[in-house]
Image (cartoon, rainbow, N blue to C red; front, side, top):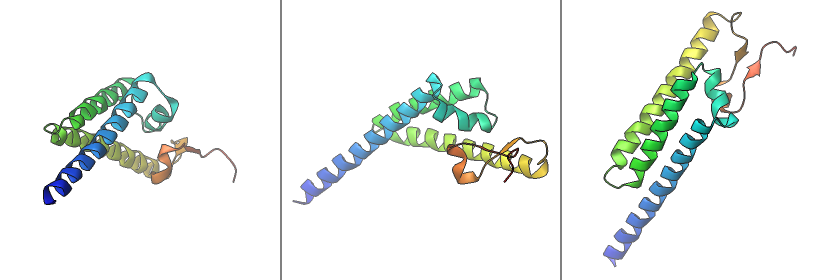
Amino acid sequence: MIKARTSSKAVTLYALQAVLAVLIIASGVAKLLGAGFMVRPLEVLGVSHDLLTGIGVLEMIAGVYLLSPRGAVVGAFLVGCIIVSTLGLTLDNLATLAAHPAQQQRSFVLPAFLLSPVRHDRDV
């Protein structure tokens, strides 16, 4: 009975890992294909097309690693690196906006940067 619980736990965790891997691979493919909802937020941060392609390829590699139980640690590390680098770009953009607000035409609120940028040129 204890082995059955352990086995079902392992299967559940591997299924969740596989779902996460498929989502990460899909995110990488969307970046490579230039889907607007994936590309626009990163373009606001100043990411070039070449870097966007690199991020997409890294996401696909990380997703493939996550599909393998032995490679899951490497895949998780790659995903973590992508998240930390995107956070760094976001914080850099916010610092630039705070230092030179007149030079920036767009700004965004940190949690809402995934949706769409807010323009300063509108009268509120």
